[in-house]
Amino acid sequence: MKVSVFIATSLDGFIARKNGDIDWLMSADNSEGAEDYGYKEFSDSVDCLVMGRNTLETVLRFPEWPYEGMRVIVLSNTIKDVPPRAVGKIELYSDSLQKLLNNLEHEGCKRLYIDGGITIQSFLAEGLITNLTITKIPILLGDGRPLFGNTEQEIKLRHVKTEVYSNGFVKSTYEI
Image 1 (cartoon, rainbow, N blue to C red):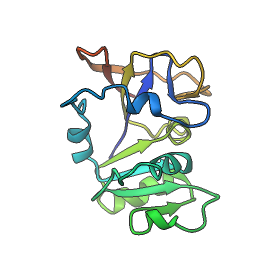
Image 2: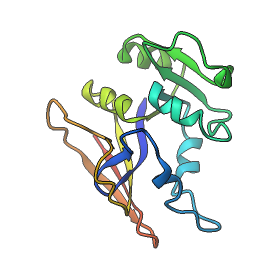
Image 3: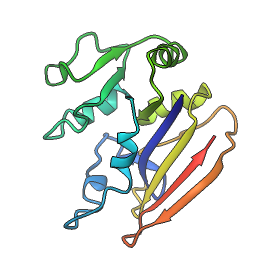
């Protein structure tokens, strides 16, 4: 099973401001007819999205649910009940990541999408991510929530491809 990350960061490696705000990302390419940088093709290949509580809280502030038709599992040890706006849209999970992957693979999942800084860091720490696609946005935030943080050990990556867009976005894909 592929366990994939598809995410954008500021040029200095942040996925959100310290307070979790992603306003800089939402306005990064607001040109008419802006492309999706491969997101639709990627999301169409995904069987299930796994995110953390912080990412869910961010997504619940969006005007519309962005994952319609996609199975979404939220990792949380603190949320006991599905928030009203997410009823019928998410499943809560609080057991081990390896057990989650085993269960999903047994159910026939072929590709997981892992989203959210802490969640990505946790999957990386356990050696469970198979590939990363990171789009660098040409902005320096100076501070915020880092994508990777500190890793316990070095993680070797194999570059697969890089695409450069006219607006300065740079999307790179790596296998672990």
